[in-house]
Picture 1 (cartoon, rainbow, N blue to C red):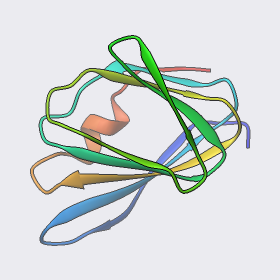
Picture 2 (picture 1 turned 45 degrees about the vertical axis):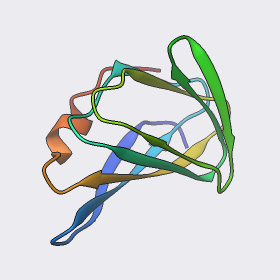
Picture 3 (picture 1 turned 180 degrees about the vertical axis):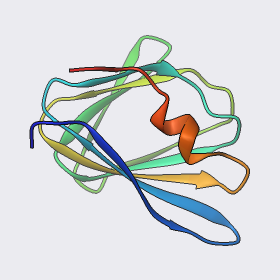
Picture 4 (picture 1 turned 90 degrees about the horizontal axis):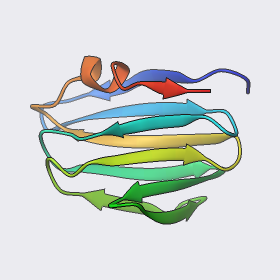
Length: 101
């Protein structure tokens, strides 16, 4: 895996599910969501940073984040992430987060 990629998995009447591929060393810079989110690592390992505190997440670990909480992600290994959004959040918002590779 050598490039960052975001793709929609499905969109139903309750939520939106997104898959994020993060190569080792890449970073989603600090951002927030307008509604609560759930992030689950399906493969790999990331540091999920809130208030300058790293929450290390490995395969199958997940974290729920309240609305409007600033956070960033750093891939410690090539990682596949499942992002669950509330219906009122947008795929385009996720795609607009600045990435460092």
